[in-house]
Length: 606
Image 1 (tube, rainbow, N blue to C red):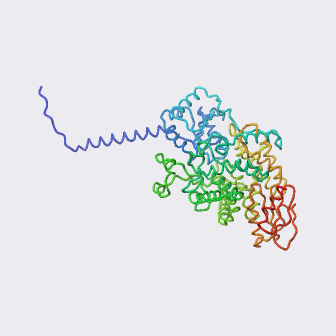
Image 2 (cartoon, one colour; image 1 turned 90 degrees about the vertical axis):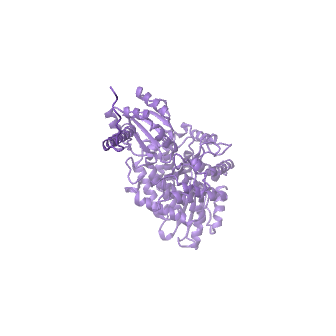
Image 3 (cartoon, helix red, strand yellow; image 1 turned 45 degrees about the vertical axis):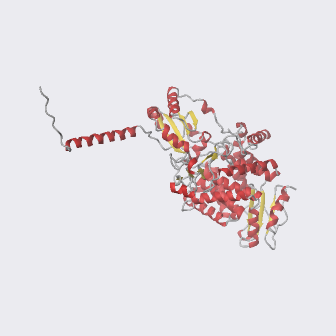
């Protein structure tokens, strides 16, 4: 049979084009559906309902605790949680929840020792099974998820805990104090400066304690350690935009991780300001001013509050390592790394305190005005009834101790800087709220109260050494300003929890600070004179410049009535004067601002 002749088809066949388009459409949809199926369906709320659902569905809870600014969190999102095997295993047996650590201070307090990203696996009853720190590769995660499915019993990682139990006493023993001091001394890096042999940054409580040793005992070793650390940390300041990078990954301070967190900006601003007041080193003033310039330029919102952080990287292709080598013009041509524009009460409290310290040291009225404006914003937008504060616009897991604690510290700083009694009233209200909402009958204060009907992991709210040391110091300072014995009791209640901190073997300079401050009165300078009197104003400005963290400054204008601490009496004089008191004695009236510092020093070191 002869072959049929070939028949040419028309160039355009509507039927075939329609079929091809339909095939392309269905393939595209299939690919989209496959992509959707191969992604993790994250829960975004950390609450008891999550565990009730896990129990109902016979699943484990996988917590991904990350931070917006965290480089390795982004890498893990892309590589690990984008891996098909990981997705399939999570879909098979896990209930995944992802939480921004900055958005939930209590959860961050519970798992902060595991860094970000932190990966926590829990049973439906809240039992912790695995706690892992940092980036986990897809292969490691696949093995981990399979192993937990095969044997969901707690592993060795959950035994690690740095949370101190309640000690039952209200004073730290000499043995515990000696152990804490030994850890502090041994942790100092004599080669590179700073404490610890790994990541390097200025740990604020450790630097505060070191500066306190300089003030209290003229400790020359402490002075060398403080200055070596402050000098080394200058390498972590961005020379173009200002602001301090989060830390150096190596002990020599030469390998910065390029995130810029408001918490680090505020701590460094406060500490470099105090260091400048003590040593008049222009590098410290320049550092403080560069930190303020950065936060005003990149983290300050139009309403006067401050944002949380700025990312390390511009993108996956342009990392901080390359980006921050560029000059200003080259950076701006590429764009700027993302800023987390949440306005949390906690972070704003830290910044208020830092700005107040900068004002104290420099007399820059704009710094105090900025601090007061931010405080007014927080009072307007984050206040809770009876003196407390929300973290954000809403607090599903709150209230959190950190927010009210931070604002209480800020208000005390504002009172010292301005002499305005309304700030002291706000500080007292905040501390009263802490006692009412966060107090643990066993000793200390919770990071957040347990929710109603809580069970499992929610039934045992976390308490941290760091927060309780800060509560003790805040309450003690209010006791000194007011003579109200309730605040002394609140401070000692925090110490009941701190008593066992030395047993952890970890560096806790904040406990040493709290113990030292509760044991003695602060340096106390009182200015007697009208708020409108130029001589009184000059004396007050000089009092604020005294280089000490544990410093109480009152300004008594007789037109305002008695001092907040009614136990203190001063004579009526014909002109403005200042009086300087230490633990054991008070000075004669001081009339010249230049005489305040030598008068206090004479009282301290007589």
